[in-house]
Length: 225
Image 1 (tube, rainbow, N blue to C red):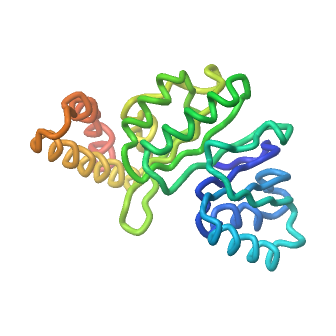
Image 2 (image 1 turned 90 degrees about the vertical axis):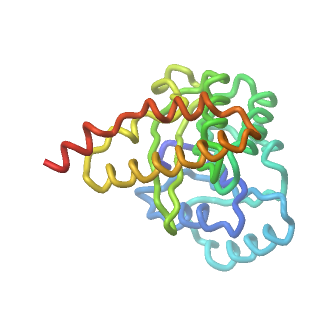
């Protein structure tokens, strides 16, 4: 989903910098952006990332910069051009905090966000809807036997299609493998919220109803015939 056309890509909560490094390693023809930024608030991590970048990417096609700062404090105004802010590996609730802070700080700046929450995608989607962001692309990704939603959204409200509370495009599967992944994700997600519903610690009935409205039968029947 990280296509060319951006001037700056921000790998936030970058941890060991694997994602940003993969973008730096791209060939010139597929370069994600002229400038890749690595962001994490942990000094020890950023020191390690900086050392690795100096060792392996001195002659990279794209320039790079490391920032030991809070994601909410991204210095976007210091860099001209089109920005893609990637936030992955944290919960949807924390992403809400980051995105809200960035939008308050840069209310008129057009931005794209690539988001991969490890949990709470529903609350994240509700927040994106409240901000009137538009969906450019969404997908389900399986890694180490876990499934994650990946959302590419834009602050330009007319750039894509409306954000759906439980997702829309990745339920419209095109292959048997996609149907299997989607069904597995739907089953696990519903089981999770039903357990919460039974615990009576949270009011999640509306979330259960939203996921129950997803209909995969037509796609699954197509591949079983």
